[in-house]
Image 1: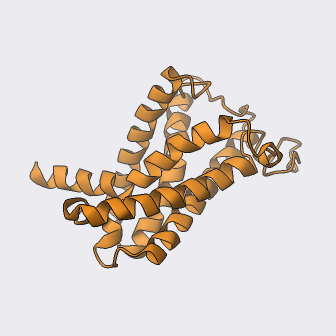
Image 2 (image 1 turned 180 degrees about the vertical axis):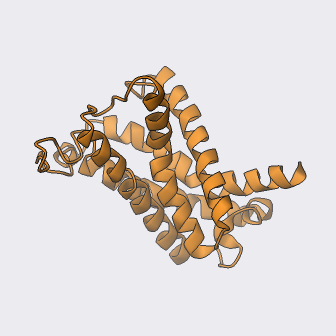
Length: 200
């Protein structure tokens, strides 16, 4: 039991900046600022099947928000961990690397880019299946896509963790599942806070 709790502590402490950045980016994307960046990444273009490549919801503003906020939250978390040896000792990023501003900048940028990039394949696949942006399938397929919607970015973020602290393959996938479940819970809270249009 202690081993499970310790593993969960490592998981959450390490990706806490990602959680904060994800929530803040929801707010950032709704603010009436930098409107010129609220343009779709696919430029409104269609794929060879006549459907949009990624859709309207994947914008340059959202992409930039993940990178900027992911970096800022990682820097902030680095300062917090410096003041709390207990947190630092449970952060995968600091087990083999020194908690320095330059290092945290690198990690923050990589995590932000990974978060944004790994959302795109899922959007691409959903457009191919005719699923509208912000919507999902019905029946058993809905369960699959609800999971993928929450897990896609986590796949990328945990991959960045593995770059700086190699993890067993089985742990990588457990980490993604825990992250996806956490993402689902946060999305429910954001929905009730009127920061999301749909719960899933």
